[in-house]
Image (cartoon, rainbow, N blue to C red; front, side, top):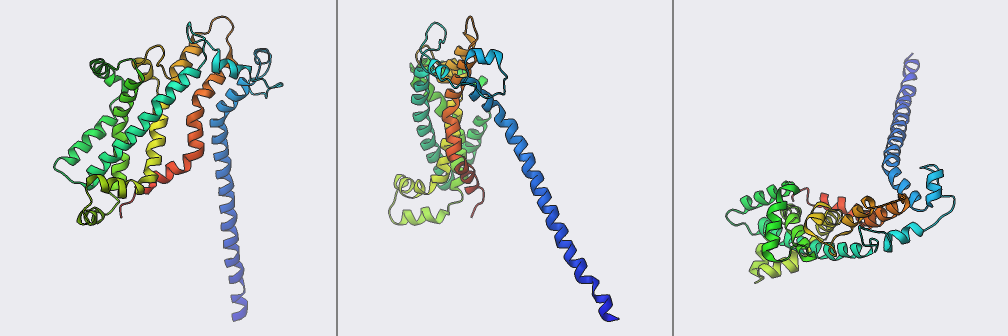
Length: 304
């Protein structure tokens, strides 16, 4: 009697895990399908841009938007790089691309270094008013671009660097300083204060502690700051079109001029090739260092 009543129990207990595992597998596959659809949705414009840039104008007019090129041609890329017209000049995006490089590289390096020093001072060298200064810098992060255009133009004029690449570097360093300070301050508060005290006892000063101790520990957050600043500066259009002139315009301004100054037949393949060239550096940065960006953000999220 006891044996008969006990026999159903193992069967019931074995059925439950099997049902749970099947449910987990189904939910996992459903998640994969949803993520795949989202990825397809976001990658479709890039697919259209690439395929269109590799087609001839005749194939674009007679073919389908989503179809693959029947015959690959890189003429549109050559035209976009060195022959496309931006107004009355037909030099392509090449000179403007190098303008963006000369603008973005020093602006990223300077704003990252200054942000690191600001975060180091605010987090580890506590002084009266440090929190107020940090709050004001954070406030500056959320001021819209349009609000600072007139004051910044006035300042650039007084400094004598209006319409120049150094002027654009100055603008992006000032505007990005609040973000880089925020990144480094939140990262440095996780480093024990006793480390600074021990270095002071050994005779190390402000500069030596920063360059010998804190900067080597800051690789994750440096990657975050560099990716953030490079993306913001390279993709910027408003500051580029407002504070530059002929010969110093970044690639985003040149791209706008190519698309909007076309006369006669609209060369969609050239427009798409120019857009990909303009977006390629930031795309490569995220492909190569995207995982380090997330890792660096989470590195300073927990104190201790």
